Length: 225
Image (cartoon, rainbow, N blue to C red; front, top):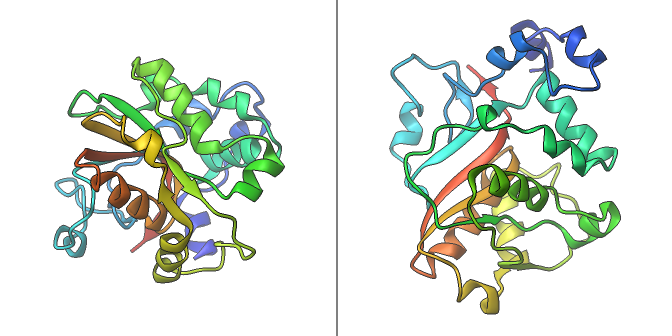
């Protein structure tokens, strides 16, 4: 898989050397999330498809899913710098042109929860800081702390989709005090989608409040076919 990714999107030296932009102009076009399935990440697809054929037959707890970028090269370096080097201010580099065109007006943005241990170590929740930036760009209110999440001693990194779903189903619950004030049309926010398990668990919880849910993820890990 690594060799295939390298062949498809060779590393860009301009992106890696720049400390002022997320990525260079050619990579901006190259790394836009297009021709890939928004639900599973498979691609490239034909131009007429936004989802692969198998995913078209699978029901999701959201109506629409929006993704800005493929999680590769300059985008991956940018997000890893934010999370690993503790630089949440770099989400300020996100511009309106980096966001997709949404099909409706939302009443509120809700960030997914994060592992309390990880957030305490970093002193910030990546999805929440991203949601704050999107809120500023779109002028839509953000509803923080809509979820409660208990700490787990293990990591999700080596878990497959089914294992992640079981893991998160035990860890994440609604914060009833906050969730009672949630508006009707919600855009659920996350930074990186790998298996989609986290978004699925959080979207299902929001739907128990009879809210309409769409999801926005800044970047999606692709699966080349």
